[in-house]
Amino acid sequence: MKTAVIALGGNALLKPEDRGTYEEQMRNVKESASHLASIIDMGYDVIFTHGNGPQVGNILLQNEIASKKGVPAMPLDVCVAESQGLIGYMLQQALTNELRKRDIQRAVTSLIIQVVVDAEDPAFNSPTKPIGPFYSEEEAKMLRKERGWAMVEDRARGGWRRVVPSPKPIDIVEKEAIKRLIFGKTPGEIIIASGGGGIPVIETPEGYTGVDAVIDKDRASALLAKLIGERLFIILTGVDHVYINYGKEDERALGKVTLDEIKEYYEEGQFPPGSMGPKIEASIDFLENGGERVIITSPENLEKAIKDEGGTHITGN
Image (cartoon, rainbow, N blue to C red; front, side, top):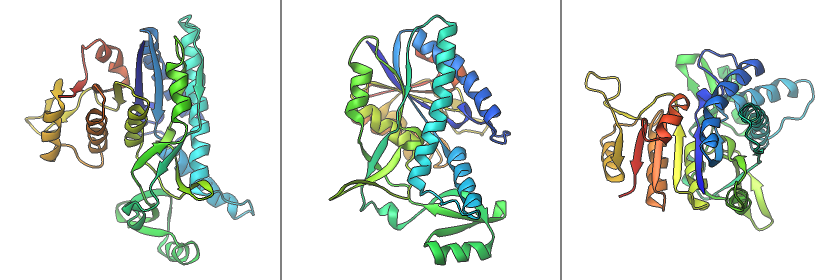
């Protein structure tokens, strides 16, 4: 049985120049599906994960506008759940249609996934992740007072935004169900799960409850792969390879590297926090906890990378 967890980058859903309409997103998803179906055509059972930043931002903005008309706003964890549903719908429809074109009779299923975080995680004391719409300074002061939101100024973009914690994911509530779906039979299911890093929840004496936070998508994807015992973790992003000295005259694409080598590059500061950094952190965590191989490449290069003819391949020592 050949299986993989594949984390989709933002470009699979939205391009930088897009406004975020349904038509734009569906066009991008269909294009991505044409590449993603190739790995299924090669006999793999796959769990796809995805981001949700722009989508959940739009949902929060819609909440703000609707609340002025008397429609109750939903908390952030519910908005993450909504984004899992809408993105999952687009992905599963596009993938199903692409598989049918290839005469591949496989079901694609989207799951609403809860990811457990520690209520004592230090991130809750230091919110850093900007979400939602921009506000004026006066509105930001009001929101701080009335809702207790942490607000930061984004001078480059001319406004204030809410910031929320980004705690470390430690468990996935539905992991056993996912494991049964992917490993329970041959062929297994094609699954879309842990969208947007998952719905952040904490454990309480009464059970699980949602919290206002966001979870890094790549970290959550690596955790999912680790918890179900997956050996292959693929991260799809906007470039065909991971680079060192990126953007400099001596930049170099990485082909095959070991865990120790990638850790050394990471400690040198080769991978900035806002771009490749979280992907490398997730890769290291996966390989240090039982994973065998990580591939980082673009959707267009996926088929070549699976055949060992492209992309960056990181292997455990």
